[in-house]
Every structure is written in C-alpha cells, then in structure tokens.
Image (cartoon, rainbow, N blue to C red; front, side, top):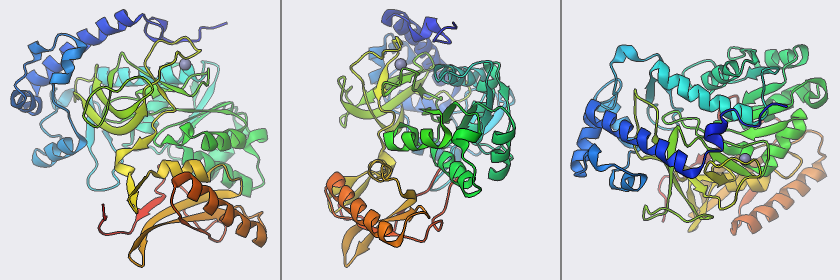
Length: 441
Ligand SMILES: [Zn+2]
C-alpha cells in the first residue's frame, strides 16, 4: 500500500521541526522583501523594524500587515507590477490575475522556483484527496490568467497522473470527454460542478453512474466545505468531493484530507498562518478570526502578514489522518468582504447557502440585498427543479422562508422563478447583488 502522505517529513513533522523551518524561511523572506522592494522598505521603516529584529515566529507580530488594497494601489501608482516586485522582471515566468469583483485585478508574478513550490503544495493536496499516478485528471477551469487551471494542471502532472487539459472546452465537450475517457478525477469550482451535472441531466445523462469520476476537488469558492453543497456534488458525481482553498497572491494554502473529519490543513512550510481576532491578537484554539498569511517561499512577490479577509476557526483537535499541520474547522467560514448588514444583523452569503442547499428541489439560487419601503430586505430567488409541480414549488418557497428566518434570525423574502431562468456559472458564481446604495449601520 502506498503512503497516505506525499511529504511525510513535512505533513507529520514534530512541531519544533516545523517551527525551525518556518523561522529560517521567514527570516530569509523578510530580508529579501526589505532588500529588494521599495514597498517593504517603506513599510518596515515606518514601523521602525529591521529584518534583523525578526528572530522567532513571535517577533512577526512586530511587522506591519499587508493588504490587497495596498498592493492594488502600488500597481496603480507604479504600473504595471507595483513596487513590490522583488526580482528582475525577466526572471518571471507567468502572469496570474486575481478575479476582481470590483475594480482592477491584481497581477501576480512568479519565478519558476516560486511556481514549482506552488504546484508542489497543490500536488500534496491532490495526493491527500487520494489522487495517484494511475488517475486521469481533468482540470475544468478556464484557460487564462486565473491560477486555478494552472495549479490543477501542474499538480496532476507532478503526481504523474494522465492529464486531460479541458481549459478551452465547452461544457458539452467536457461532458462528452467524461463519458468517453476514463477520467477519474475532476477539478472545478463548486458552482461549476453543479452546473455540469445539471447540463448532463438535461441530456438524460447521469454522471454518477455513466462517468468514472471517483474524486472531485473544488477551489475558487468555499462551496465544497459547506456540507450540503458537498453532499450535492458527491451525489451528482458518485464521487468524493474535497475543498482546496487558496489565494493567487499567497499559495494554494489548504486542503481537506481523506480522513474527512471536517478539517482543513495548512501547508505550513509554504505559508505561515496567523489567526487574529478583531484586535489583531492571536485567537485561542476553537476560536474564529481573520487568517493572515506570510509567504515562506515566493521570491517574485514576497508577501508579509497578508490579510486574507477570510474567517477561519482554529481547530483544537488532532485530525485522525495523523498530520501535525495546523488545521481549521470547516475551511473558510466567511469572507469579510462578503459581509452584509441587514436591519442591524450581520449576514454572510455563505450562511444563506448553508440554509438553502439542503433543500432538494433547488437547482440554483440568487440573493438580492435591497430596500423595500425604506427597510432592508433580502430577496432569495430560487430556481426550482423542473420536476416540481406548481404546488411543490409553493411548498418549497414556504419551507425555505421558514428555514431562513430561523437560521438567520430575520425574516427574508423568498420567490421561485421559472425553472432554468437564473444564470449558471462556469467560473466563480456571482449570486449576490446589493442594490442598496448606502448601508445604514
Ligand atoms: Zn487530516
């Protein structure tokens, strides 16, 4: 039998071994960032710290945070790459861009070594899902500057698996390939997984029985860590679904494992995680906070204490898989940028997805934050399965309204639209609209 771990010396390392490795890499990264970029010289000088002040992991708290807004401002002020590019431009190998919901995308560059380290983390994640050399892998992300496709493609290749590059394929072509080739592993956003299954079902194809997929992995959105969404994907493909959270700017930083214990491990040799409360103090185990990551390997754009805006819960239990890496309960629980306030109550779209997905007759949904007669309201539109009768649709609307009222603690409006009329998503879904021009806090 083959090993459960791809890199046992890292994945099951004693804490003191990992700490030693992290401290060495951290010191090197901060020295490099300071020496090579005006961006970090400015920030560290303003905070009155020198790279030499950083001796242990605890000293990291003295360093300033880095935000995405700062990086965007730097690229706007110093086109095209900003003043945080820390290697000669000709040493870079590919442009990746973050998917921007507002404003300009951030352009991220890597050296070949940076990229190899990124792909190795990704490969370690796929291995933890059970992907092996004997598998045939289809990364069904778009071929372009979004990192999802490249990560999946190179990681599968790194494992020695046979890769089916489907970046330029339409959904119909991908379904066709899933039926005609022995593809056992599929990677895509969770929204797209549900879409591809729905499209297949429309043609009378049941991918769970007619395709050979045994593992699916999902990135770009937190859906695969939402139990009801994961269950829906697993039923549609007759496979095990895994969540792979990552950030273009930092790393494919986390992975679920085959123990399926609800934990997301962190590639601690590639990025050092801090989980901080609202006062920027480290949280205790079993508490939630914002994930702040420092890259331990990237040389082209080394980021120090990068605020991810992702909320995670630090686990206080050991995963049955035996990995010693830091783990979070249930992946990314919320994105600070997605937070909405409705009549004084904080609402995260992920929470609404958790409440909507368990209902069988919902094929797709959309959220509109709006104002009705001067009052905040959420309109949840559901796209019902075409097999529901008129009466079953009305029943679904009433059940959902109830579940959302109880789950969110506020009354929301629910409607059923014509089956098939809401948009479907090939990449990251955009299910949320906020029509309110000003937010009354
Ligand atoms: Zn585990």
